[in-house]
Amino acid sequence: MTAFPADSTGRQSQRQISDRAIKWIFITPTLILLILLNIFPLFYSLYLSFTDFSAITKEAPVWVGFANFGKLLNDPQMWKYFATTGRFAFLSVGLQTLIGFGMALILREKFNGSGIVTTLILIPMMLSPVVVGLFWKLIYNPSFGIFNYLLGYSSPVGAPDWLASGSLALWAVVITDVWMWSPFVMLLCLSGLNAIPDYLYEAAAIDRASSWFQFRRITLPQVMPLLLIAVLFRTIEAFKSFDLVMGMTGGGPGDATELVAVNLYRMAFQGQWRTGQASALAYIILIVIIAISNVYIRNLNKIREG
Amino acid sequence: MSATKNNWQPRSPVNYSTRVDKVGTSARTARSIRIVLAFVLAGVMLIPVFWLGLTSFKSRSDAIAVPPKVLNFQPTLEGFVNLLTDRSVLNARRLELMKERTDLNWYEEIALSNGQQITGASQFVGRLRNSVIIAGTSTILAVILGLLAAYSFSRFKVPGESDWLFFILSTRMLPPVVVTIPIFLMYRQLGLHDTHLGLILLYTVFNLSLTVWLLKGFLDEIPREYEEAAMVDGYTRLQAFRKVVLPQAVTGIAATTVFSLIFAWNEYAFALMLTTERARTAPPTIPTILGRGGIEWSAIAAGSLGFLIPVVIVTFVLRKHLLRGVTFGAIRQ
Image (cartoon, rainbow over all chains, first blue to last red; front, side, top):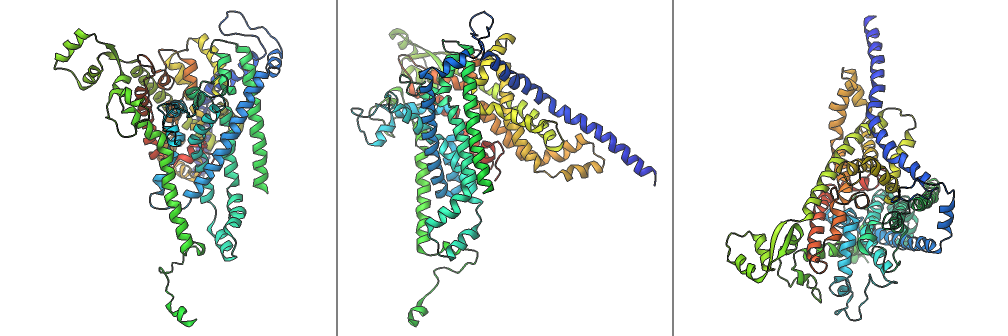
C-alpha cells in the first residue's frame, strides 16, 4: 500500500519537471524568431524615426529629435495622402459592408448547391491582391477592357478611361477592392446569421411582426457584433492597402490613388531612400491603426454588454 | 363558408419542424427569388476571373481586339508559351529553314507561327520555382514551430502569454512596408538580402502569427482529459502529444498548413522590397511581364491564371475552415 502512492508522487514530480522543460523547448524557437524579426525591428525603426538616416549613404544616423515627425505633419501633401487613404477606406469598407451583408441575406437559407455557390463567391478574397490589381487593369482598359463594354459603351470613343482619370481612378480601386473583399464581410455575416435562433423569428411571426420589424429588431442586432468585427478587419486592411494599388495604378495618375502605404514605399525605397523620415511615417500610420482599432473595440464591447 | 372550409386542402403535408413563417406562397416565391439571385451573384462575381481565363487563351491580337472578343476567338496556347519561354525573332531566311524542319514540338510550332524561335526557359520559370521553394519551406517551418508553440500556449501557463500572442499578431496589423524598413537594413548587414533564406525566415515569422493563433484554437478544442488519461496509463507527455493530441488535430493542422501556404504564395510586398533577382518570387514578377513592343496581355493573363488556379482549388478544399482561417481563429463556426 505504501509503495504505490510514493511511486505515484515520484512520477508526478518528475513529470512536472519535464512538462516545464517541454513548455520552454516548444516555445523558445518561436519566441526567438519573434524577437529577432518582429520586436527588435520595431524598436530599431522607432530609433531610426528620430534620425536623418538614409539607407544608401554610408553615413551613420544623426539624432534629429522630432524633426521628421514635425516635417511630415506640416506637409500638406502628406495630409492629402492621408485624406485619400481615409476616403478609400470609408468608401470601400462602407460598400463592402452593405454588399457583403446583402449577399449574406441572400445566401443565408440553404438550398441545393448553396455550399458551392457560397464558395464560388468567396474565391476573390483568396487571390493575390497584386495579381487581382493587374487583371483588373486589363478589365478597365478603355479600348479592349470588358468593364466599359459591360457598362454599355460599345466603342472606346467617349467611354471613361477609369485608370487614367484623376477623379475615377480612386473609384476604380474602390470597385476592385469591393469585389475582392465583400465576400469576406459576407462570410462573417453568414456565420452571424446562422447563429440566430429560429424561435426568435417564430415568436415574431406569431405576433404578426412585419418583416422590416423582424429585420431591425432581430436580424440586425444579432449580426451586429460580427459585422463590426468584419468592419474592423477591413478598415485596418484598407489603411495598409498596398498590393492592390501597386498592381493597378502604382499611385497614379498623378497622386490620385497615392495611399499612405504606397507613399511610404516610395519614400523608403524607390529612388528617395529617406529611411529616417519613412520610419517616422511608419510610426504615424501605426498610431492611426491602433487608434482605429481601439475605437472599434470599445464600441464592440459596448454592444456586447448592452 | 362551410363549403370553402371543406374544399381546403393542405398544399403539402404539414411538417411540424417547418417554421410557421416559412410556409405559404409568398415565402416560397421569396425563396425562389433568393436562389435565382444567389446564382446571378455568383456569376457576376466570377466575371473577372472568367475574363482572365479567356484572355489567357487568346492570341496577342485577340487579347487587345476592339470591341473585346468574348467567345468569338480561336483559342491558342500562345500566351502560355510566351510566358514560359524566351524567344528570338527569326529573319526571313532562317524562318524558311525552320519551317522545313519536321522535328518541332507543339510549343516550338506556336512560336514559329509568330515568326519566333524558342531560345530557352523564361525568367518566370525560375521565379515560379522560387515561389514554390520559399512558400513551401516557410510553411513547413511555420506549421511545425507554430504547432509546438500553440501546444505550450494551450496547455501550460506561459508568463506574459497574452503579450506574446499580441506581438505574434502585430506583424499582420502593420503595413508590410513598416516591417520591411528595419528588416531591409538588418538583412543587408547580414547578407540575407535577396536570398531564399532571408525570405523564408521572414515568411515563417509572418505565418507564425497565423499558425500559432489557428492551431491554439484547434488544440484548445481537444479535451485535456485525453492526454491526462494517456499519461495516467503510462505515456510520457511527449508520447501523449504525439499519439493522442496530433491525431486529433490532423484536420486543424492540414487547414492551417494550407492557409499558411496561400499567404506565403500570394505575398507581394516583402518579396518586392527584399529581393531583386536571385530569390524574387512570382507575385512581383507578374506585373513586369512584357513582350516585345508593349504589354503582352495574354502572357500576363496566362501567368495570373496559372498562379491563381492552385488557390481556387484550395479554396474549395478549405471551404469548411475559411471563416476561421481569415479571422485568425477569432471566430469559429
